[in-house]
Length: 332
Ligand SMILES: [Zn+2]
Image 1: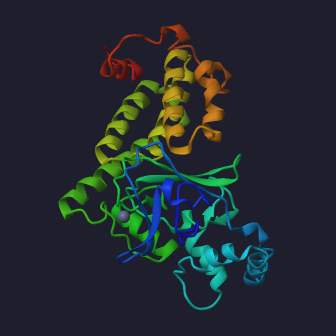
Image 2: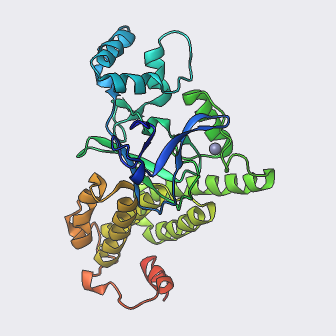
Image 3: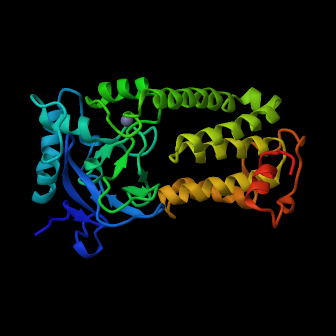
């Protein structure tokens, strides 16, 4: 009989009738999760409470003993799930090395990590089809589809925040001890070079857009760069957090210059994408939603009124292309 760690729609359900994934052996990668049917973007694939969190660790010296104590206190099935996870560093300190091989921080910037029975089994891809995020309300790691996933396709998450081919390989080797052979990393040399060039250009643009002085004194240039960056993400097939984060940055630029109409529209686009990859209960969406209704609530509003608009100036009845042009302050 299948246990809850072998199939499931949501953690612990384990009912084959609703299972969106199953655990399979993946050639060259050990185990992995594979879609049992077609999955559309925005679908919650699973949500997982941590088996163990690293705040049980009292000191570096006692790490292995602290983890052993925490593990012993878990139900037998959870203990088995923990011990069956992949260990990239066999040898001494197996419990700590399972954390090292499978742990995820509980939210961006958190210094507490968690090990998850199911999420931890999803392999890495530099062009993943799913996205994980820690939901502080649910106290669970959620995994949403961010691309259409076909039945039989392996589910994948990115363990990195991007980078060129060599940057990615180096980080994956250093942090997780493996070389990546995902579809992006195995492109023919010319395509890989083109991809790296786009990624390098995107990194430069992203840096420029994040520069407060530029946003304050050259906002028109920042918007042009934002538009170019969005096109690069599309061309490169990037559908992770980079795009909503760009929308949020541009929301702030428009808001800084009193353009409530565009600020609201960008905040709305940000929320729409975040909802798709983090679900309706996303803390990020909850935080940003008030700015859609009233961008003036954001502390950065109105440093100047150079681009002053009111909310009722969001144009209605434009087709997508013209709306985008309006949004990025190009001539409609
Ligand atoms: Zn890769």
